[in-house]
Image (cartoon, rainbow over all chains, first blue to last red):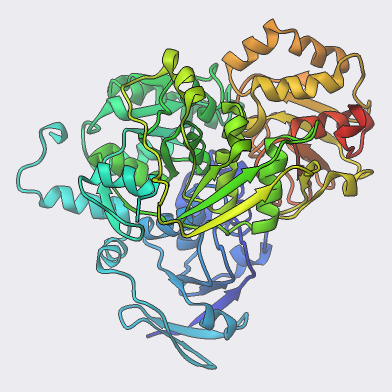
Length: 171
Length: 417
């Protein structure tokens, strides 16, 4: 498992600082969304983030708006997973639905510093850090299936394709 | 042990007995979206389906940037209008109608016992009418359009019993700010919040909407108020469909029960940059600001506009301020017009904008420059929400915003009793 650098933030990182509302209807392509990721919290992030990096944060990550771009912009910025003490519920759903893994593990958060290198093993529910390994409850299979498909839309698309008899309304 | 409202509704929808914590696959009664429908359409197209599963369940209200301020917004709206035509979606409300949560409510979609999903975090609002309503993201909205199904976890419930008579110039907004300030922005994460007690029973539906709208700011999945004769009388003329009263059992299994006495509650305000950073208005007096906003899905109804107007009547707002009035909907606008409330605003130096979200989410109609401060009746004050990341937002009741607009600094509205 390849290690990645950590961007560490505090509690209550909200959707407005992750992806400002002024862009929600004007920046529509995921790659362009990534350029504004965390703009109002940490302007360095979008410039310096590299594929395979992680975000580690405190409680209630993603609170606020239902805007899915908050998850999309992080995914397309190359973030491999967000590890937090807790997640706001709509962000949690949006992240899964965008194929961005979200991991709840307070103990790991307390033991990871900004700039650390960590590795995550999803199916084993393990986070490797400089201060040792931390366990988290692996995501249920139904959710892993959505993540593995790359998000809810590709997941549903596959499901529809696999149905032997497409619904009448879908024809 | 009895069941909570959420357990009953989700159980009824799933066709079995359920308990908090279980995951159910359910079909909603309505699914709401707004200007983000264009983004939902984009996701829906990826599924390569010709038709949505059930157009009768889709409600679309254009409200976020109305009328369109740029070509991009205009194109978004156009894409949505064309989709509505193509899919024969009957419940479409174009730019002239108002904020989605108000329009949805006043058109009778919010009914007791209904399961409502919305691609907006403040979808929690419809619990004010006894519905189960929760916010979802746009991929999920697209997938519900396609499949008419979603998975939900049956939430645990926090019951908040609110008792006591409010003092003059103290409103539902002060009650909910006080609760969020005490309990924190993630207090109800993943949970349902049930607002009960005599104070809530005495509230109008408009005031109940303030509670359920802002339940989202405690992280709640949904907010809920027991439907009663006020709800029924409201729905008598507006209800879109038959409905059933669904209420929690008296011995329901609540995760927690909180008791709040509002007898001596003072006006409250949320300070920058989180909604749970709440202080008494009396402690904030003297804080200068540049723009006042009275409106939004939280506080843009007739009773809010009247509460502000009674303070502004015969007086002039401070000349250094921009004071923006945004009725929540065309219907509320008309009521305020007929009652002479709008005349008071114009006379006192306010600027009345068309119904809609206005500057609340920082897209148009009064965004803030670096270093500027707004005092707003909205529900959210995150950094940069109303414009520059170097601006600040305070949140308060319409009465507090009106009193402060006269003085040019945060002012306790009880000075105007």
